[in-house]
Image (cartoon, rainbow, N blue to C red; front, side, top):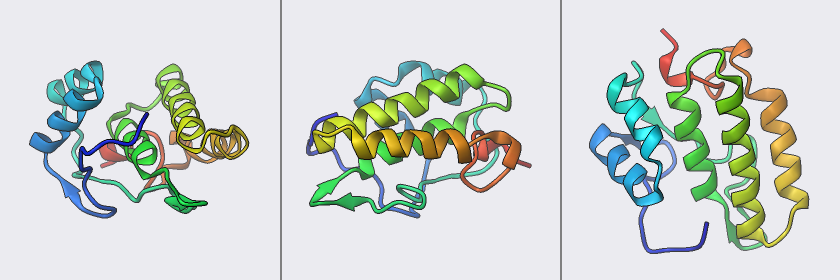
Length: 132
């Protein structure tokens, strides 16, 4: 992921499906959009940024990576273990690219692997948009 001029919604901003479609198209998340379009999550999408982590570290803005990770988590279904692993790995890779370093990216990966499971049913857990 490289810095670009595409503007993502702000932290805690509700994102309508039309904007989600635009984001998915921009980032090449075509399968994710198909999943959302076919069966939109019941809750509106709102990103909290990098959950329990600063969105900017050492002058590097990792919010875009966290936003996309949140979007994938929001649209997830319970039990999609492989899809969740891929989303977490993509977060790690995106953060590593943005920061040009792996240490924090790997730490974040381990954090989301431990804390993001749908078993916890938290506001940031896998499938949080489908919680009823």
